[in-house]
Image 1 (cartoon, rainbow, N blue to C red):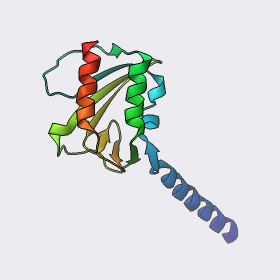
Image 2 (cartoon, helix red, strand yellow; image 1 turned 180 degrees about the vertical axis):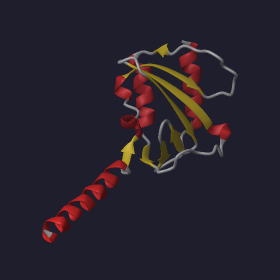
Image 3 (cartoon, rainbow, N blue to C red; image 1 turned 90 degrees about the horizontal axis):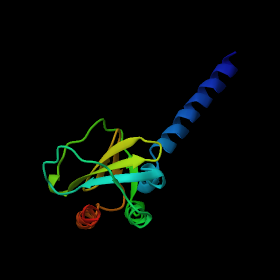
Image 4 (cartoon, one colour; image 1 turned 120 degrees about the vertical axis):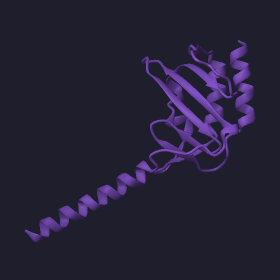
Length: 141
């Protein structure tokens, strides 16, 4: 009886460790955002008081450009419940409309991505100048 209890306990501990390694591993940002299923986007980089907006349908080239930008960053899930803004001048929001009709909001700030979870960029700080240029490009179309 003790033998089965010990083996069961050991298996549970191993499963918890494997699950935590899998959950908190380094991941590609484009995969986390599921950018391949995105149909519409809206990007807010400049500080302006937008009360209402509509997601913009984008062409494949624009979506590919966004995917390339996001895929260059690796992120790790943190165990933080929230975050405090330390770099408001480098913050932008990305709204993604998926093919199944769902809409998700992501807030990026320097090296943090926040949605319903908080991720930290592992390898670099987000290129805010590129984001500003990309925002101008999408809104000018």
